[in-house]
Image 1 (cartoon, rainbow, N blue to C red):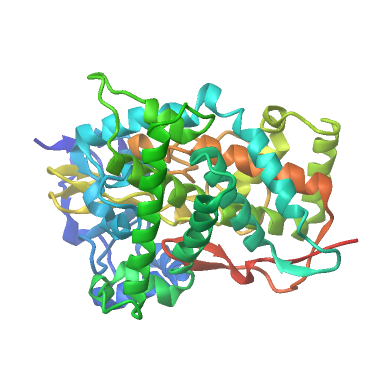
Image 2: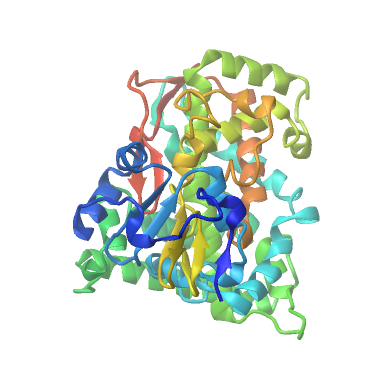
Length: 461
């Protein structure tokens, strides 16, 4: 069966369909394209659009032949298509060493639908407000460690905040030996890929050789094994205890239509997925927000005026409703999205796409970064201007920081809520100043991107 989306095609209905080989592409070998994607991806993407247009073909090591797109019509043709056309989990094998085989990100079809349904209530509706107190308390505790006139990378503080929020709100841990071990090991775990060079271990599979505890991949595997065991121990203990006010309790209680619960291995991999999706990503987004807010005094002035209307000790749910703060968070996620692409979708059957006939095995990958810098959607896209999100509402195919369709980030509500609560607390309680005069730029950290130098700031006395 072939699915045709003539309404989104850039050809007239009478035009003959072209093959994938007719899509413009880079002539560089796959190995060279892989290195460019790891070490210098944003200039590569921007040059590709200038040279090839909105739809481009590429090939990287460890991935199927890829077609990526960057305009709303093409992205709608993919994200709006029947999800049964695609496999997604098999295109995310790069993440398997990080998350495990039972992770939601690795699943497709009925298993993916079941797992997502079991996890969804933990991050939406009545579950969200109670996390606000945890986020506020953790932020206060981290800020209490700052010394006046001391210079420090704010990204590190954001990492500490987001990790502690996850350990408390998701794992239900706030103190004790297991908490201390997990905090130390999880920091070690996320730091294994904290540079473009280290990130190559994820992208180039032949480098993933365990040559003993002294080898890079050997160190990573042993760290992951220790984390896995600590999580399994926590799951076993919690099965014998009364439910707590955290995500793990909700996941332990979740049942599908048949009354089945998640297994220990499923829970372990989903907890690692939540850590992966909510720790480093949110920390980088928060660091970027601090940078832009303090780099543009009028943005901070507008935010402070809005926050002052809530008075002292505002309700986190009221903070979440603030329109300008919401616009600042959205613009932060637009200008430098934490990941450059949505999850790739591998075709299981022929697909007629924007005037091209694509065969099974091709990966379709909407490009978040290029979409968020599309000149018709976002004029002067390199400028940080939160007002964009007050002047108009962008569709689900025009603004996609959390992906889309049935693969939209499960915890996007949690992440946005955390960004707003943490920023509101920091701005209301501390005076920070940027130290470096150099513009911050994105640098690769695993599959995500963090601001260069970690945004060095100084706490004013």
